[in-house]
Image (cartoon, rainbow, N blue to C red; front, side, top):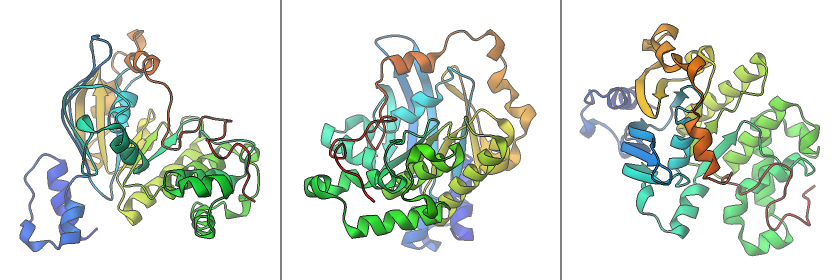
Length: 317
């Protein structure tokens, strides 16, 4: 991202008017300066219950990694679900990669979800299958029925191997996914997300089950992807030092409302403390309630330990 583009995006993200005349930007730079994700006045409620999200405004720009903070039940997971149509939007606007999420039909929702890479806390890999096959599942949406029945193309395999090399574990391509360490499995999950050629990456607590050193390395990788590929990455975290060390901006939710939004360089732990002010007294988990109404799903349509349709009888060496 050029200096002019970063200046324009930074001004828009912080709520200020852009400091750069759009006429000075090329078409490519202008795309970088415009948000890929926009929500305005977003509200989500389940079965006429209270709002899980209430009036959330959010912009995500190409090339940036944004931390999503908040205590359990603050609405973090629900916000991520709302960006792919998995949470019932009851008010406001949601636009992702040019899609008006609130007005998409079923086929259009499938297209949107194929454009959003997702990285999960529990990795969601198919443990008995090879690392390479797990990465290839990221191409299922565009593989077509012939490839699902008879295997992926050499081009698919070549790209999957390139991605494994990029995340540093190409030497594990033929190993079973369940034989890898936690940090290695998360790198496989990131490669799988990249296999989709995503326009956006949502990482929901991707380092919660990793030790500090591995957590740093995974977040460094996601930040590198955001910058080098121009893909916005929204990552939910619980550990403030990780958010402060690895992200460009921080947004924070409390009881479904966004109470923090700013550049990471302008924030510190004291300013973020109100996000967790009532953790000790919180017994009501709004996100858990939301999860009870939403079946666990992923962009790869696979659950841990189970093979996606079309892969149950095949393995890729």
